[in-house]
Image (tube, rainbow, N blue to C red):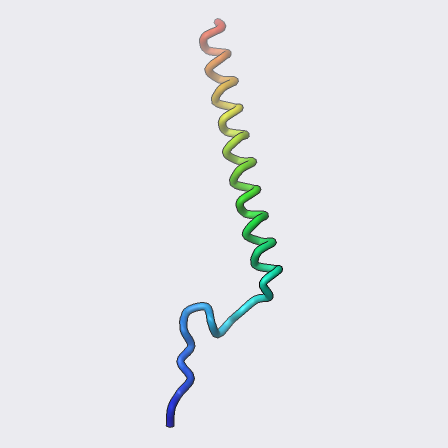
Length: 51
């Protein structure tokens, strides 16, 4: 008897809108973290060279 082969990610599918919203939220969180770190580092450099 032939079996149905479940490939990676095929057996458990989420609705497309939920996964794309989660992906956009993750990318937005990464962008916020990057710019917060860049601003913190820039502020640190300004304080070091101003003294």
